[in-house]
Length: 128
Image (cartoon, rainbow, N blue to C red):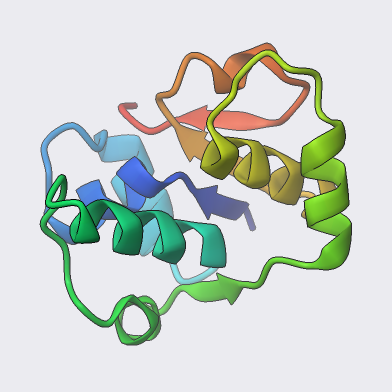
C-alpha cells in the first residue's frame, strides 16, 4: 500500500485525463489499495487561480475529491508552523505546505516540480 499526496498539478492532470500524468502514476492513483490524499491547500490554490482567471477547474473541489475516492487532508496548526520553518529554497506557499504535510503525515508527494526536490521529502515523479 502506498500513501500519496497529490501536488495541485498532478490532481488537475488526473481530473483532466491529461497525458502529462504518467501511466505508472495513473495505475497507483487508480489502485484502491493505495491511499490518495488531496490537501486543503490544493483546493485553496485552485480557487485562487480560478478567481484570477488563470485556471479552469471544477467548482466543487470538495465533492470532486470524494467522487474520485480520494481522502481530504486538512491543514493543521502544526503544518502551518512547520511550513514557516522550512528553509527558504522555494517561496511558493502552496508547495511549502504540501512539503510539510507530506513530511508530517508520512506521505509521498506526487509532483514534477523541481523546486520541491530541494527539500527532504519523499516524492514520486507525476510524469512516470
